[in-house]
Image 1 (cartoon, rainbow, N blue to C red):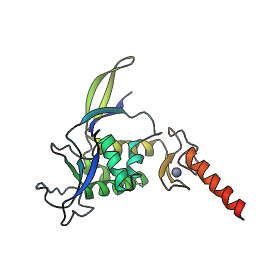
Image 2: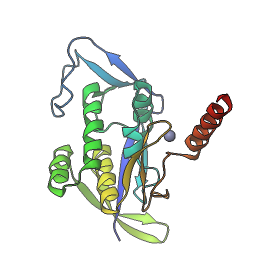
Image 3: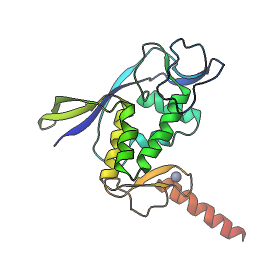
Image 4: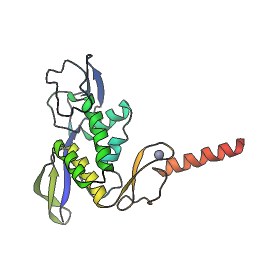
Length: 214
Ligand SMILES: [Zn+2]
């Protein structure tokens, strides 16, 4: 058995959006960088503090991929990056990643997850740096063989591939509109309408309230 691991950096003091003015890069131009950092919107770390964390892909219950897709406000995107790092290469200063790249990658991941065609999936995945390094690591029951994803972006694409090969399905919550996966390895019923018990209960309360009024 092989596992896929992620070893990446996060920003425990938080992340913010900094707008330097001028045009931002187009959303679909994932590869374009602005090395001078004089223009556009950026996600920036609030301090130089970084913390390394590690994850192993085990199931589809609580994927980074879905958390990332559901980060639809800038506050949510900043919290995601503070907690899990940037979906791209690491930089040495606090200008972490261009705003447009994050938005572009969010929609690209959603496309990946929704692809029904294997060639389209592969074509979409490869430009994001689809590489791994193999290691032996100390596991609970002795040495384990793992592939470490080159970065957070590749790890989330791996989750998308894992989701497709396991027959998980993507749905939107009837209450909060968040995306969620159902089916094998998600520990959710395959016809779930809500992302969580909290949303299921909230929707039920709303229904009851409107019935009381009627
Ligand atoms: Zn919900």
